[in-house]
Length: 354
Image (cartoon, rainbow, N blue to C red; front, side, top):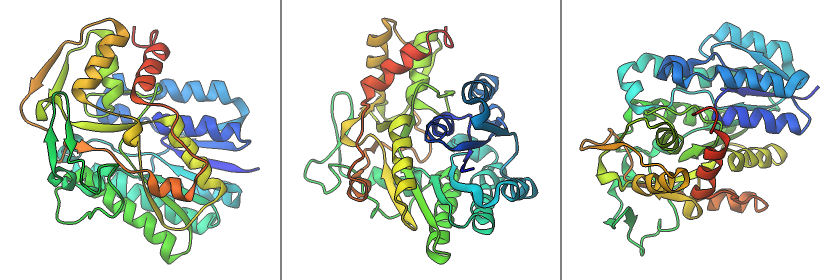
């Protein structure tokens, strides 16, 4: 029995991965203890998705409500399934800058130590498995803010003559920069996964994502930019724009497009790979532009206010380059742009966000 082990299985990327790999014939073992509720409150609980997965996938899905910080529990899980595990998709994380600053021990234990627990047990019990890690573009800290940026009417943009105009590449330094404590814990995890690939010749890939989004997102103010803007617009919840005049730019990748990347890596794995991944030039917007699109799609005005202070370590402009991944996996391409993502969110959540 081929096993796909997915951490954060009730979250946005984990739930999509669980459905996708079950569709490929895997038995999915989902690991999720609803820490998102602890991080962001009851409204951000992922329990609804864990239940939905069990109902939808039936005998193809087994849920394990364990904490990735619990070394003994993680080890027992890997011992139970052993070499039947063919792919590990590690998406569980504490994802917020602000939250990490309030509780750095928990942030580091979840993001860095939890990742070490997962990959060391992969090495011990299923060393031939492909290990896929959702890292973050925050490993580059605020270095992107030192790029030559030009203020436009609704967004910041990069000087068109710059080498990163088509997207920031993996050669950007991760040193001499302010990461935020969240960024630092993800750097630790990212480097650990790379090192296991190089040192132990394991099949590993780190995906340094920008805005990962989709209709399954349990959005919160501190995490889940596009989904939270749409949720606030639909529900009449006040929304706060933090700094940069709301002109900060993010590229956005639909969870489905990202999971297709994971399948490509599983089918043709490499060792110690690192990929910037996101919407690139195909799918990106500023906060202002996202608000305008949400208002247009819903036919409602968003009640939003502006807060002068930006979040520490926040990017003014991030559009990543997918060129390295596309070179390695030329059959992959993006399907969703920002408008299509937001329209799907609106249609999928009319009842949940009513």
